[in-house]
Length: 94
Image 1 (cartoon, rainbow, N blue to C red):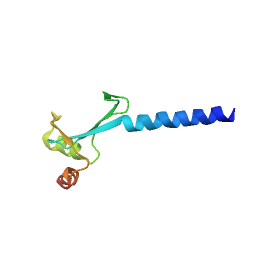
Image 2 (spheres, helix red, strand yellow):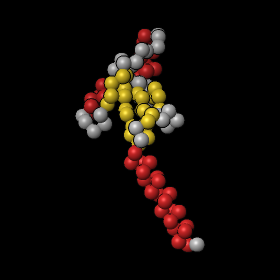
Image 3 (cartoon, rainbow, N blue to C red):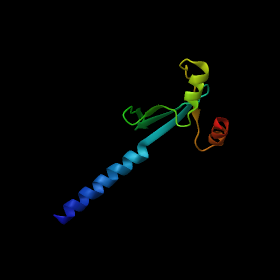
Image 4 (spheres, rainbow, N blue to C red):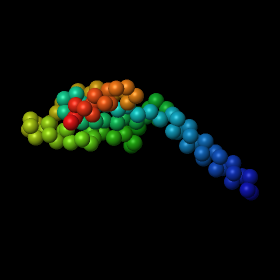
C-alpha cells in the first residue's frame, strides 16, 4: 500500500512538472497607451482561463484615457523579458 501511494505522489509531481515545463507566457504591451497583455499557453495551445488581458498595472491606460477621452485601439508589441526592452519599457512609464 505504501509503495502505491509513493507511485501516485511521484506521478502527480511528474504531471505538474510536465505542465510547468510545457507552459509559455507571451508578454505584450500596447505601444500607444502602455496597457499589458499576458497570453499563456500549454502545449502550444492558448488557454484563456489562465491568460490575463489588458492589465493596467502601471496606470498608463487610465492616464491615456483621461487625456484622450476615448478607448485605445491597441497596437501590441511583444516584449522579450530577457532583453533590455523591459528596462526601456519601465523607463518610458516614469
